[in-house]
Amino acid sequence: MSTTPTTEAAEVSGRALQSVLDGVTRTCGGFEARTLSLFEHNGLPEPKADEWYPLGRYCGVYEDLLSTTGHNIVERIGVQTARTAAWPRAVDGVGDALDALDAVHRDRHRGGDVGGYEFTPTGERTGRLTCSTPYPVALERGLVRGIGQRFGAETGFVAIEEHTRRGDSVTFDVQWWGAREQAVRLGGRSDAIAGGHAPADD
View 1 (spheres, rainbow, N blue to C red):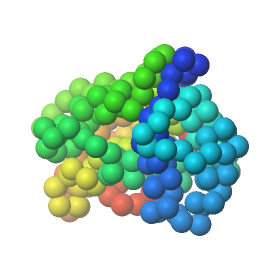
View 2 (view 1 turned 180 degrees about the horizontal axis):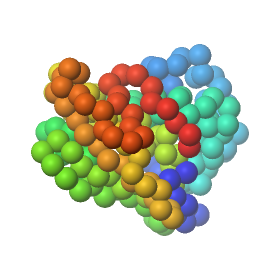
View 3 (view 1 turned 120 degrees about the horizontal axis):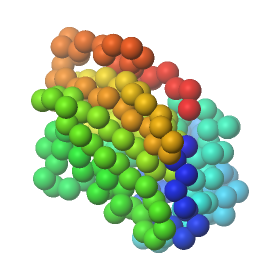
View 4 (view 1 turned 30 degrees about the vertical axis):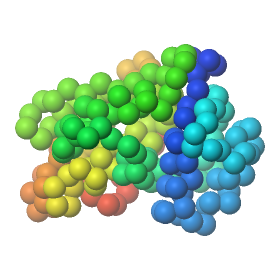
């Protein structure tokens, strides 16, 4: 997990739960039945988009997904979540979406400590994103990938480098381009991503 905020009093919108199911269906349909069983195992049978559910149980679904299907599936769910989420109309480009990520996150949660996101631009097409939510780092990485695919020009090519893990948060350096041939990998441990999979160890 990126962090461990207090989830006891927090709730998550059924829209978020639907995003998981949609992500699994669109990217790896063979896991759909297993994912539904994990929802039921965590006390979330047949989630509805217009209802609210205990955040702790929802986090339990991700823990089970990581242990039974692996990081790749969770990252794909993050991609689909970003691609299908309801974003503010003012969002126009990758930088805008990364900046609005905290507002989108809070719109899907209520009560308790749900953590959040902080984005700091460092250049015209670069920035640093700090994630302090109760969700897996693989999901966070997938969200950035999905933002690049939804809001990036042409191929939406994105490079993600894990900058630090400090206490309850993880920070990524993010760089994006309009076309694949323009991309230059970031130094150090970087994951240059368009539609492929980035190595994950979290």
